[in-house]
Length: 190
Image 1 (tube, rainbow, N blue to C red):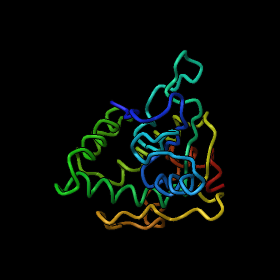
Image 2: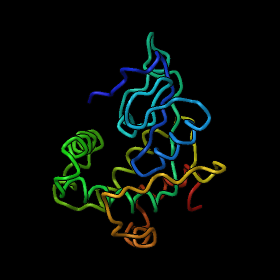
Image 3: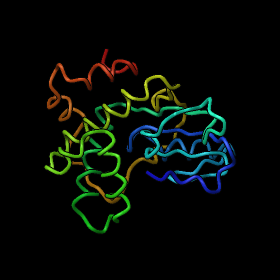
Image 4: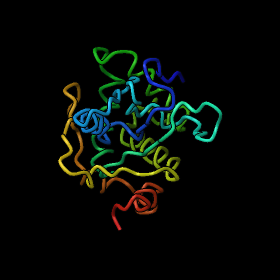
């Protein structure tokens, strides 16, 4: 997968995670403090981009693309509910744009949830996406959206309707699912 770095200074900051985890809010938070990060594109000082969640992180390499990587996470059930609506919109409505669908399908292959996406099992796809991203990134420093003071809420997207609530998601994820153990790693649902 091509990660877009072009205007970024060498070795910038990366904040990554899942879509709907507050990436746009994080970018706006830093922008107000003159830290120039791009949102899903390269900014002068780095990027806030979910698409980097599956990259190989060799921060000790000779020329790492990022010198600091943080994982952004917000309430997993709310994120999954919102992510499910993104998957429905991006894969069923042509006006969203082929780039979003192509990015999602590329990540689905890496995260091993393309089969459920192709079967249009959107909630299952969203749960698998969230779980695979955060299970994979648990060794990185964490930024929890709920812990940030005055974080602007920029994560609502006009192109999708919420079809599920966090409580709907809670009821539909089985008790033994890996999702729950990964969520606990990040301090949720103890």
